[in-house]
Length: 98
Image 1 (cartoon, rainbow, N blue to C red):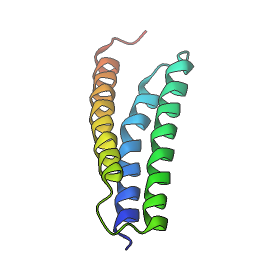
Image 2: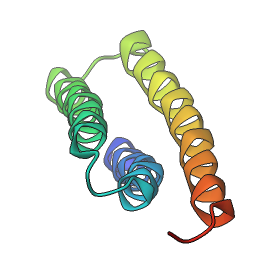
Image 3: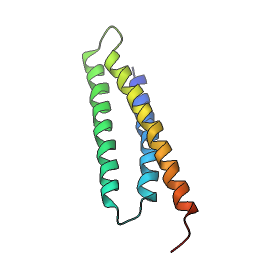
Protein backbone atom coordinates (compact mmCIF):
# COMPACT_ATOMS: atom_id res chain seq x y z
CA UNK A 1 0.00 0.00 0.00
CA UNK A 2 2.77 2.43 0.87
CA UNK A 3 5.07 1.20 -1.88
CA UNK A 4 3.98 3.97 -4.27
CA UNK A 5 4.66 6.64 -1.66
CA UNK A 6 8.10 5.24 -0.84
CA UNK A 7 8.94 5.12 -4.55
CA UNK A 8 7.60 8.67 -4.94
CA UNK A 9 9.72 10.01 -2.09
CA UNK A 10 12.85 8.20 -3.28
CA UNK A 11 12.30 9.40 -6.84
CA UNK A 12 11.77 13.02 -5.83
CA UNK A 13 14.87 13.03 -3.61
CA UNK A 14 17.07 11.47 -6.27
CA UNK A 15 15.48 13.73 -8.90
CA UNK A 16 16.30 16.80 -6.75
CA UNK A 17 20.03 16.07 -6.42
CA UNK A 18 21.05 16.93 -10.04
CA UNK A 19 18.94 20.09 -10.01
CA UNK A 20 20.59 21.17 -6.76
CA UNK A 21 24.03 20.59 -8.31
CA UNK A 22 23.01 22.60 -11.40
CA UNK A 23 21.75 25.50 -9.30
CA UNK A 24 24.90 25.53 -7.14
CA UNK A 25 27.26 25.43 -10.14
CA UNK A 26 25.55 28.07 -12.30
CA UNK A 27 27.05 31.50 -11.84
CA UNK A 28 24.96 33.90 -9.77
CA UNK A 29 24.27 36.31 -12.65
CA UNK A 30 22.49 33.57 -14.58
CA UNK A 31 19.32 33.44 -12.50
CA UNK A 32 17.29 32.47 -15.56
CA UNK A 33 18.90 29.01 -15.55
CA UNK A 34 18.07 28.64 -11.87
CA UNK A 35 14.45 29.59 -12.46
CA UNK A 36 14.13 27.28 -15.46
CA UNK A 37 15.57 24.29 -13.59
CA UNK A 38 13.30 25.02 -10.63
CA UNK A 39 10.23 25.26 -12.85
CA UNK A 40 11.10 22.01 -14.63
CA UNK A 41 11.58 20.24 -11.30
CA UNK A 42 8.34 21.67 -9.94
CA UNK A 43 6.24 20.70 -12.95
CA UNK A 44 7.52 17.14 -13.06
CA UNK A 45 7.30 16.72 -9.28
CA UNK A 46 3.70 17.99 -9.18
CA UNK A 47 2.70 15.69 -12.05
CA UNK A 48 4.26 12.74 -10.29
CA UNK A 49 2.65 13.52 -6.94
CA UNK A 50 -0.79 14.02 -8.52
CA UNK A 51 -0.52 10.75 -10.45
CA UNK A 52 0.54 8.75 -7.38
CA UNK A 53 -2.26 10.22 -5.25
CA UNK A 54 -4.77 9.65 -8.06
CA UNK A 55 -3.66 6.04 -8.37
CA UNK A 56 -4.06 5.54 -4.63
CA UNK A 57 -7.50 7.20 -4.48
CA UNK A 58 -8.91 5.38 -7.51
CA UNK A 59 -7.56 2.05 -6.24
CA UNK A 60 -7.15 0.47 -9.67
CA UNK A 61 -7.32 -3.31 -9.82
CA UNK A 62 -4.95 -3.52 -12.77
CA UNK A 63 -1.65 -1.88 -13.58
CA UNK A 64 -1.65 1.88 -14.12
CA UNK A 65 0.34 2.38 -17.31
CA UNK A 66 0.34 6.15 -16.86
CA UNK A 67 2.03 5.89 -13.50
CA UNK A 68 4.68 3.54 -14.86
CA UNK A 69 5.36 5.76 -17.85
CA UNK A 70 5.60 8.83 -15.62
CA UNK A 71 8.16 7.11 -13.37
CA UNK A 72 10.17 6.13 -16.47
CA UNK A 73 9.98 9.73 -17.73
CA UNK A 74 11.15 11.10 -14.37
CA UNK A 75 14.06 8.66 -14.22
CA UNK A 76 15.08 9.55 -17.78
CA UNK A 77 14.93 13.26 -16.91
CA UNK A 78 17.01 12.50 -13.82
CA UNK A 79 19.71 10.91 -15.96
CA UNK A 80 19.73 13.91 -18.33
CA UNK A 81 19.83 16.36 -15.41
CA UNK A 82 22.65 14.37 -13.80
CA UNK A 83 24.72 14.50 -17.01
CA UNK A 84 24.15 18.27 -17.25
CA UNK A 85 25.05 18.67 -13.56
CA UNK A 86 28.28 16.72 -14.01
CA UNK A 87 29.14 18.86 -17.06
CA UNK A 88 28.55 22.05 -15.04
CA UNK A 89 30.60 20.66 -12.16
CA UNK A 90 33.54 19.71 -14.40
CA UNK A 91 33.40 23.03 -16.25
CA UNK A 92 33.42 24.99 -12.99
CA UNK A 93 36.38 23.01 -11.62
CA UNK A 94 38.49 23.30 -14.78
CA UNK A 95 38.05 27.06 -15.29
CA UNK A 96 40.86 29.18 -13.92
CA UNK A 97 39.86 31.60 -11.13
CA UNK A 98 39.17 35.17 -12.22
